[in-house]
Amino acid sequence: MIDRVGQQFGNYRLISLLGRGGFAEVYLGQHLRLNTQAAVKILHTRLSEEEAAKFLHEAQIIAQLDHPNIVRVFDFDDTDGIPFLVMNYYPRGTLRNRYHKGERVTLPTVISLVRQVADALQYAHDRRLVHRDVKPENMLIGPRNEILLGDFGIAAIAHSTSSMSAQLPVGTLPYMAPEQIQAQARPASDQYALAVVAYEWLCGERPFNGTSAEILSKHLMTPPPSLRTRVPTLPHQVEQVLLVALAKDPKQRFASVLAFAQALEAACQGLPASPLQSSVISADST
Image 1 (tube, rainbow, N blue to C red):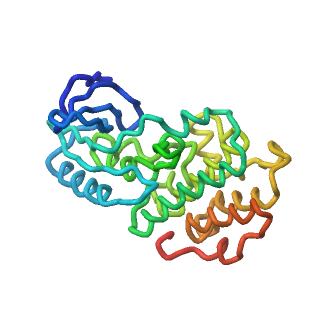
Image 2: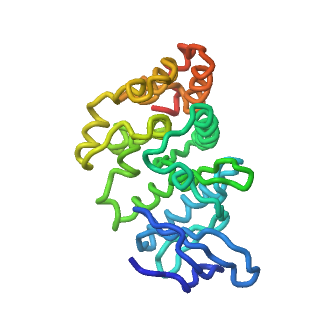
């Protein structure tokens, strides 16, 4: 990988590497004139003229998202064909930094985190935008301890380029819904991914592990292992809600990601989920 520290992208000089993922690198950038700091996400691809136009169109859509639980993108461009986005910088890191792999999170905390992420996703889904890469690494911690979901559409943008299209499916395999593996992502796919995250937080393990091929096969064919076997004190209703959200068929999940979060809240209070929440799928979820 190229070390871009010291390089200039737009109005920002890159001063340190914050993180690196499958689609992009994130640098701390400093504005050349204002001396303000921001996170600069540089995609692992180089754009043709046609791809650059598509990138700018997709970035414009992402930049219009304005929600208290979504990381705001406020600039985007490409430098020598390399696309980048500029967004708010949150020095407290991500929920993966806070809750490491294998670490369990208390049920009330999980309920709160899921609701915040679901609110962000519902806002995007209402605008016909699917995230496609919901995972703890994309959940940032704000200055008031609020959670902000980042990387909206980044996976789709990256894979829209010819240099990365052969790497489909889009997303992160351990959190990927069956239909997304088959390149048919929809709002219900984000619900599935959020349910995988909640499952992982509650018991310290993701439902499916193994090689990439094994994980892919399990998402498609294998029911998730019982949560209550791993966490006997977990309320039965909570497990049932997660099983609905983890259904292989997206039509069998909750009507929306917000309905999933609300059902989880109700289950935590010992209330059954509404049948309408678990059996009626919204029009934009299919």
